[in-house]
Length: 239
Image (tube, rainbow, N blue to C red; front, top):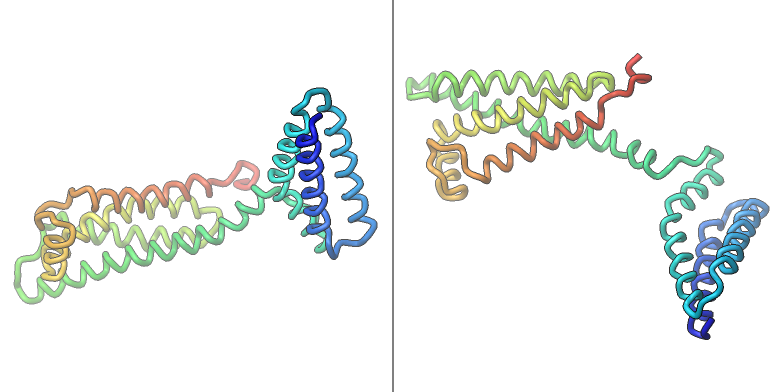
């Protein structure tokens, strides 16, 4: 091997050993030494296996650094297990465990926001009816009311882990209904909503099919559908 290849391999090994010293700090000495000896054995085996060409050192260095980078989550999981006394968990499992409560919080916040749109739209319609003015069509009002009721049912279903995925489906459908028909109702009875539709979204108040509106409805629906798929219980869990 050339001197540059030898330097590259030596430097990569030193970086990896420095990383081992870093994530094994505060770990009991014997355990940390065993971890370091295990890595030294792997490095020695890899460096002697890939010898033979002038660029072997560079290839070995790249391979060592690549393995070290891909092994960082496992190293951190191992460190946590040693410090807490719990068995190490794969990074994917820990990520899923973190995403479940986070997804529930986000789904609840978005659901409450869309529900508030439906409730506000129905309240505005009620004021228009009380003043004997021209309300939206019966289809618009009924769809908004049913969609808002569906949102409430979906939020209640999400409170239990077994029915959480069903609640997400309810929310996906109900949110799409409320965002479309509730928005249409607001545009019909609210001067502020009419101004927003004409000036900001730039579409006539009688039309609710502009790309911005469709994209918002699709984004919210896909958000809930993806959560529903992730929350579908396995057969062992559903028994």
